Image (cartoon, rainbow, N blue to C red; front, side):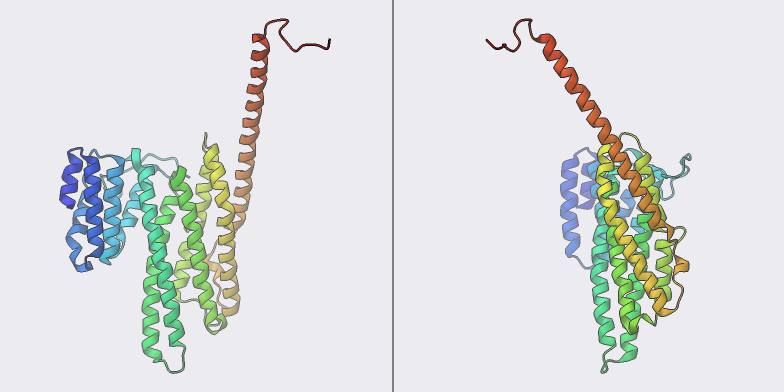
Length: 351
């Protein structure tokens, strides 16, 4: 079905190609991981081939590749490769530089549809965060079982350690993808979806670090893996500073009134989730007597507040301008109506 979908796409039968891809994706969802090697190799090869396809077909092929990669249980390098390529095509939102050589050579992605196609990657990240939330719930249950008096300490500890390692690896991958997209000139609904995913990420990380505090009242502290993850999220090259860059880009762009209004509604929730997560890390740092703040650049939350005020001011300016234009048009309408009314045909006076 997948080669058929490709041939249909090249023959400009785009709707049929989308349908074939959807059926193939459903079949792959019920196959064991060991049977997905060939479909995954096919989808990876398609991404590297240049073709004149509709945006819908590009998104369908990309979604299939990311779904196959997730279902096959392999290292999720595909999403990071796509994020690198999209960042290159969209451009950096803080640097004005000439685009160099394409980093991943995913020729199926093109500049004209990069912003739209980024929504497909965001959908895959959303699914990954959902799975990570379930994985953390399982890790919590394993940890509770390990702390019971009758439990085999070594066996339970090994299981918990393996789960934590996998969890941190997957969170690091998600953080890397989000950071690249946050640094890109992404606009419209994908930008709003990106901010929502960041809010969800901070909520999940807050739960993870609170879980560490629940063990021995937090005296043991975070593991080296969690410290490394914290650095990826809140460090000098982390997600938090990249979010500030995206908000700066959003407010500096022209003709973005509707987008600014929508994003302004997301900013307070994002700031709250970030500050709550940072407060949890600070509390854990105090109880464990391990300096976790060295992994964080904590001026970010304050910068977000400043940026939120700038967004609010931008909205007020645009609303004032719209109100003035409305009043101006209303005044012109009255003048036109008065000019169109013949003399002596106005309101009747009192008899």
